View 1: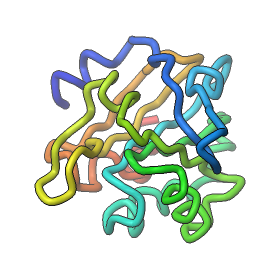
View 2: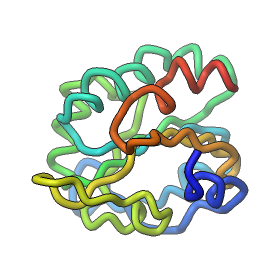
View 3: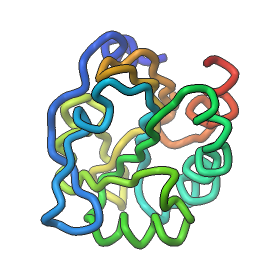
Length: 161
């Protein structure tokens, strides 16, 4: 676990705006996790291989099992525009399971210090999964190399819930 992960555990989610479906549809994460137990995924980008083939699909596949464990909300945040996130959500079949939110200027990602500069891609998010209860970050599963899908995978996370 990185020092960022350790620093985040026990802290309150920052109150930043993200976007869903259209550029006019602003969403605050703190509203989504208020009085709820949930899971937040941070991914490098929509349509990227690890995100599209492993990280997000794992949580979609285990959605019912996670709900039965008491997780009310599953949200995925990516440093992309809202049009890319909406197309990705449809392609992955995330509708009514995982909410995919755009962080186009990486405001949320920078606020939690999970931003990274990926050569040839630019500013992105480290890959992580967070357990959140009533806006408090309880546990962070951050990939040590920022991009792999082992520590943050649904199977690893569920073993530790």
